[in-house]
Amino acid sequence: MSEMFTIGISDMKVAKSADSLVTYALGSCVGICLYDPVMKVGGLGHIMLPIFPVNNPKENPLRFADTCIPEMIFQMEKLGCNRRRITAKIAGGAKMFEVAGDSSFGNIGQRNVLEVKNTLSKLQIRIYAEDTGLNYGRTVYFYTEDGKMVVKSFSNGIKTY
Amino acid sequence: MSIQNLEQLNEMHIDVLKEIGNIGAGNAATSLSQMLDMEVDMTTPVVKILDITDAANMLGGPENVVIGILSKLGGDIEGIMMFIIEQDFAKSVLKSLLGVQEVSCDQLSDMELSAISEIGNIMISAYTGSIGTLSTMNMKTTVPAVTVDMVGAILSVPAIEMGSVSDKIIFIEDDFLSGKDNVTANMLLVPSIESLNRLMEKLGIEL
Image (cartoon, rainbow over all chains, first blue to last red; front, side, top):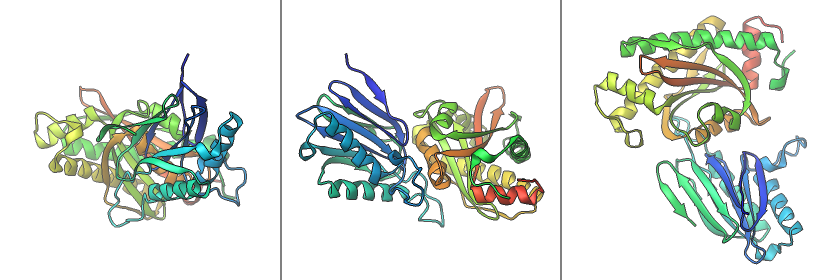
């Protein structure tokens, strides 16, 4: 029996084939899909901000790119995944509103994407596909059976990666 | 005394915020009604401390496609003011404002977008203007930005910009109902914690 799990904001989940994972309506948040094709184990994380605030250790590590991704990998390794086989697909990081006279407003999406890439690169995880930036919200489906990421949006239809 | 997080707000503070929502939305409803020359009703404001997922569920689920109008607040009160319109509400407003027959929300023309932005502008100005007068605080608003998208993605904007200390943010929410079609829109005021403290202080409320 395969199930579909919903990942909330500042959350993540690791699942085995043939379960699938979904996170709804990413705006400037970023969805990170990690996959080990041999074990057919996949993880989906939904981060909101780039970097864990060291001066506020009680924060939820899953809210931040630089702490959520290592935790996902740790959970995958517990299920027998090998870090060297894990690859990534990412989506989100949009700039939802263009506020006149304040071009830095909403740049958090871009910073999120940068930090996700930075963290993945430090962990030597390759990015196979990305659907990031621009100005629209995205829902991400991730299938552990084949590692496919499907991105659904209101204005740009459905894309499969 | 000042509050550091939203859990410290007591019932009296919430009541004060409700009254603020009431006054702001009352003025906004009046200006909308004048502009459209039709009746606009509003419900009693709701003040909620929520995370975005719950807020999105209140507004029809995260994937519900709505029109979001956002204005950044500056001056004495920093925060975000959002006007979230259901597609039916937008259609009804555009029909009476521009006299168009068919409106498709996934392909709004420049004219329609500009009309929606103007409605947002007038309502947000009416709302913040009345709060400014009441509290003798100077509130500045930016020209509103408009987008048509999933409500979950739209709501993540104030949560990220204002919620840097926790996942929760405070919404001062007002529902508007227009005419016989019974279509709704919501206005959300999302102040920063510092501004909330300043506002309470100005109104002479003990924190």
